[in-house]
Length: 513
Image 1 (cartoon, helix red, strand yellow):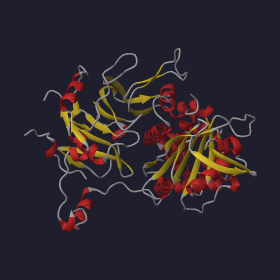
Image 2 (image 1 turned 135 degrees about the horizontal axis):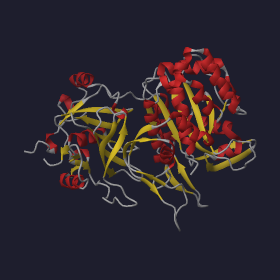
Image 3 (image 1 turned 120 degrees about the vertical axis):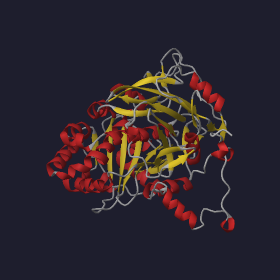
Image 4 (image 1 turned 45 degrees about the vertical axis):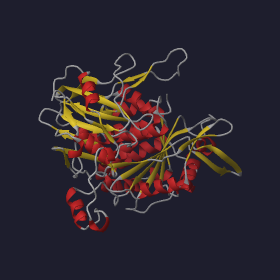
């Protein structure tokens, strides 16, 4: 029988989006570099001075709750096209993100709240609703937005920061280049009869992004939706944070905080040395914790007047609140799971072992011949090419259309500290618009994305797999060989189950064998 046969597998346990990256830069400063700023009061005072230069949010003191030293804190980060109260009547908060920092939690949690979420509220004696959430900013500024979100989720907000997209380019230039795992080709050209957006052309695959290229990636607005974009922003944030070291910040902290500070509008409490130190000390205990994505799962709704909203349910709001305040830890290492199994909790009824899963029972199908032909279409590659024999049932590879509007599959070279390295990418659309599974091969033994794996390793079909989780969901599974590294990346919205991720990685088959 073929050693790769499925049954032989062991059971595996244009502008509006610019603000998103500014928010990511702010979080990077707070979660990564800011933690080390507590080493010197002068650095903190400099940061406070930079925040004061950005201005103070009016009315925030009536909305926010002050946290005692050592208590968890929740930050509301708002991205807007311009500040409330500056004379323009159509100001919008196009990005709203809650960041929960808790030293006793296994992860720092981040929730992107869709701007089109349908809400109702009252303000100064008038009733509003149904309206989109971002209209709260137009009506009452940051304080009203915070009040509505706080009541919607039943969460106390401790600080508010409004970041203008004008600082976007400066923040990118200051942070520098970032390695990004791009899930599919991001492409748009303006022309007669087409949507007029920023023109974009970013190929799939693991690559170094600088300046305009990173900007194109985070502001892409085509062929997906606000939920997918939020997931992409959070994934980008995770990759930035993993590569932006505290040492770089300490070399010249004012260089970065001055860029971000003058583009931020914050609550007055955050502009004091004592409150900022309190936050930074909290972060210092949480700096090494992973960032965990929390996501609403609203549905589309078109009102009788034709306006399209996103609707959610009370049950989903309760779930999101629980995940934000009390995130799950990554699955326990194999030894701990084995101990639990010996206790009988993983067996079937009356202690009988559960039946072993099969590929079909996990929603996987054997696509060996299709994968082989897709890999052959790559053409010459300077290191061994592996493709998965198993794909989710109903899925197939993205069409081989490497013309002006295509890009699948792709062979390329990526810049590394040791020079240019060969790479390839296979792309599998799965799970709805904007969701793609990635199969990456790379002749670089230590890319940043594969550093700091989970302690939970698996061996599937003879391959020792390194794992990276987002909470309890696998987002990346990698396999290392002497010649190259290979990985399977989950979709932005984590549409693949953990077992599907593991079995796909275990089914990686070398072309030509």
